[in-house]
Length: 327
Image (cartoon, rainbow, N blue to C red; front, top):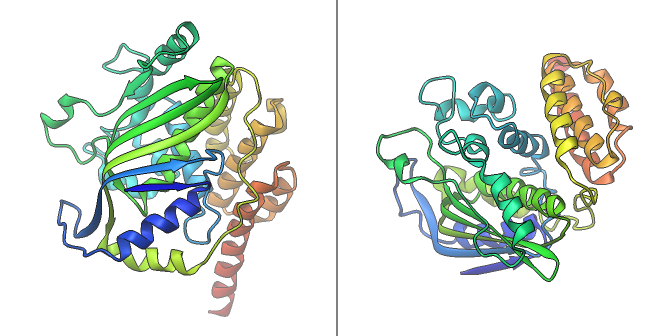
């Protein structure tokens, strides 16, 4: 089944409509679900990767998952700072066995797959071999609480544009899909900038695209929110090699996690990356309940596409404060 839309919310609406109408008669390990077998998704504007809705507008956790990948880590402490539910997927209370970071950048302790595909695309622009493997045959030898749902990421450079196609064995349409598309299209744009190419289309192929029955009510609420604005995709990544900025922002993420007073201004990066750093600082302020400084940091963000997510943080705090005062 093909779903082709311009934005992540357009894709999500069409997929969830289909899944909510199907019977919840598939019962894998995590509970009953409805399922689309063999789904092909196409996001024609990969920068329209952030949901604009009230229920699925999760920019902070999506950024966290991306930086977790780029940090090359499978640390539970790292990702649970952004997404608490990961704690249920750890075998040992310290790591996530299926974490993508080591598989992208240090597969089997020796292979930087990300670097390999960049070099390959530079030397052989028409190659069909620029493939990153995430799921591994060894993942089935011993039972784990988390193994990769993603089989491969493939990059194809055509007519000066870098296209990407992801192959998934399984995808949770409500919880997992928005984060996956955000992270993978960001990786697509990072590779594009690393080889000096424009951004092409993004395709996402899933063997089992499913909705768990326990999330059906939330999915219906999402659908009832109606059509969201498509006017604010993420801005273009700067047309330069991105790795110096990525290393700087990864260090800043560690600094601001440990001290919410860490200064964004000292980073001296392009405003594209500075905006993401301000988002990380706003999250740190929120976690430390320093809400009075969030508005000041929000006013330093240059791109309007992020403001709605920060306003939601502020609104959530105001609503919580109102409930506490009332009681």
